[in-house]
Image (cartoon, rainbow over all chains, first blue to last red):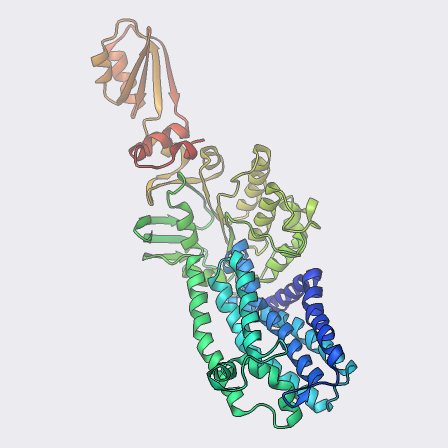
Length: 243
Length: 312
């Protein structure tokens, strides 16, 4: 029963951190209304601006949530809790799994709130399209969860917030999250298309066009996952050896 | 399925070595602890106590040597729930109350004790509703003790459990500890408080520079060092003769009084009486463990070991 109780307390710890939880949910929502309400009839790259920006802000909030488990691991290491856990029968992977579940506890309401906000500005999708878009976003977030773990194990706790925040901002900037794209063609565009954040933002448009993501998107997500996983394993081992 | 810890295995550390870079922390350390024993690892800061304990708990991998905890490697013993540990660093968790932290820890073990019983036993029941990151030093220590205990482990490992705690808190702690050690648990604790090792351990293992330098009951540790002194009034004794008496390692004169520090007080006293029948006011005193400690670690002076800290 240890994993169920552990998960229950991990969830409790997230929900009790009300300020953090509230700000995490409210920020992308506020940005969405602030920018999109004046442009409800505008178009962007061939789709309606509200659909594009709804997806962008859902992705923005979700990326912060996805790197969150790594940040929490970092804090647990700094506070000595990880060492304490390692001298109990609890398996480290149970702790990791619980933290990932907690991340999705933030991701799912973020998506739902943004969808409602988008609908209020005229975004209309079929039920199957909403679901498909959600599926694409959840899959596209996997590299960010792993990236969070890599940095959580490697970085000192003081550096964690600026590093994770900075990385999410960079991915957002190059992924077109902020409502503009840095390039439409050329080498810069190639760089953008090699980032999972770019494809995350395209999720809404791809679903509307039908057929979901192109093969290239899946390739990019898979490549980031395959590269980051062994790094996370190495970072964990390094951290465990130091403890 | 719950596996029982082997009752006769005890804990065995064989030729254990660990270095941090070029600095050796533990050097070919051998130690065998029987099940049910309460053993103090006593030594100055930097002696290698924490490194030894970390290896016993599976937190640190030894460079060389082996450890067996009830017949299993440390990681296996920990996973089986045979081990409870109280580390030096605290384990406060954001947004969790004391009672919840103890209940959470209990849930990791196959056969834990009752959470309320453990809170009462450790005196943490008085602040069970407090947030774990808002505790005083003494309260945090009780909570760490409760989390070490609640899994009902066969082996309790405590790394300087009373560091930074006031005298009253230390007394309360050891009072609870005695009840628990009486239940047949194996207890290993590190300390640099000599009086704690003396008062609460069946056996003291003196560690300095990563090695065991003495190992035995507290009385034996004292006897092994020049820890008895003979005093007497002897106005006309020849200093050279006194110093050369068998069993005497040091000699002082204060006016008519002489003070002999002895490695073997029995032998020294017989020789003293034979050589100086006129000696009066004879007094033989057992040395404190502190003196024994100073004696046994005397070769460390000048090597940078912090003896003032170790013997406070």
